[in-house]
Amino acid sequence: MFLRKTIDIAEHERAFLYKRDRFVRVLSPGRHRVSRLFGSTRVERFDITRVVFRHQRAEFLLNQYAELGAYLVRHKLTDTQFGLLYRENKLVDVLEPGSTVIYWKGVEQVRVETYDISQLVFEHPRGKFLMSNYADMLKEYLDVCELGEREVGLFYRDKQLVDVLAPGTYLLTWKGIEKAEVKVVNIDKSYVIDERLLAVLGRGLKMGKSREVVNAIAYGEVPDQHLGLVQVDGKMQKVLQPGPYGFWKYNRGINVKLMDMRLQNVEVSGQEILTKDRVSLRINLSASFRILDAEIVTLKLKDYASFVYLELQLRLREAVGTKQLDELLEDKDALNTVIANAAKQRFAEYGIELHDVGVKDIILPGDMKVILNKVVEAQKEAEANLVKRREETQAMRSLHNTAKMMENNPVLMRLKELEALERVTERIDKITVYGGLEGVLKDLVKLAPVN
Image 1 (cartoon, rainbow, N blue to C red):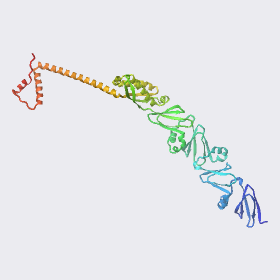
Image 2 (image 1 turned 135 degrees about the vertical axis):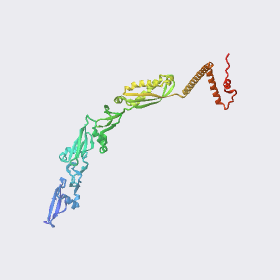
Image 3 (image 1 turned 90 degrees about the vertical axis):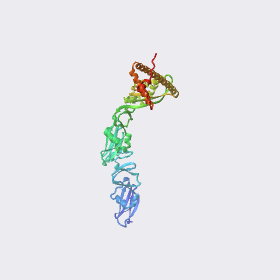
Image 4 (image 1 turned 30 degrees about the vertical axis):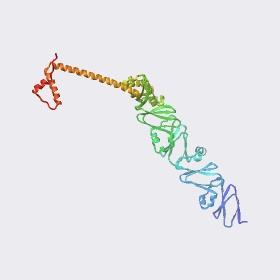
């Protein structure tokens, strides 16, 4: 009777049985009779409703006695992990890096969530709820940053900008890991990004990997000889000179339209038009223009290039339709002047300057070409005959004048005789002279006197 003793374990208890200070087994709820034959026995009781198993030699016991694994769960954190211990979905403890927590198995719903503190940001779907309800427990470990609907956050790690936080962001960061800072930018009225900040946001290597930056800013460059027109929520706001620019896109729609301020060319080709005398022509027109007022062009014209093309096309048709074919062929410059005068005034209303305009080609239909060629041929033949008759008349007049001069001047007559003789000797190989040179000169040319 005295060789055994009775031990009662309540439902909310577990007990460790020791003999001679050596662990024997775990006593579950109920009545247990323990022998006293082999030395003193000792019972160590634990209230399992406290969930966490707190014992000086907890880790030693788990390492030495594998059977304890059926009753206890051990969770060990690394040096880069924080843990949140939940009991029935309620946060009950924060576990620091490198710590170990041991709790009773199967008593209540107990779990440990671990977080890598090297990531610095505490990402939790219910982070705001946890800080609101367990601030006393968590404020020692976490910093809070909450942005308004009109604020953007610039997130720095060790003084380097690593991310952009959207309006309304709720950010939790682990304390004491790195030097983390959030600079708040109010974008309620100012949506233009500072030039120095833009250099990091638009071109920085680290920032280029951030998806949020792509959604946060509208980045663009205005080239030389161009202007940029900024529209915010569909309204024209400002004109940008050449250079890089960036704008916050949150809470507003931003569009930057580039306008080329250089001289531009337009070709109006293959226009089939009837003249006043109903001759069908195909005409090619070339023009150059430049934008004078980019803001007016943007506000009044959806597509200024199409507008310029259509206006030149209409003015060309009006000008050709009021002239006959002969007028067009005789003076193409007059056609250019009519088109330019009509188009310049129209373009000026929309902030565009017409620089020059010119008709490149006037192409006639095939049958009209044949007719015109015949007309030209007849005209040229008539001109040739006129020139021929004019030359013949001039020659006769010259010959008559020469004869009159020689009639009254024997010396001049003798010179003409010598010229004739020279031309004759050039054409023959040999000449025989009788009566000497004087006879040749006297008998070569004999002019009969006129009665």
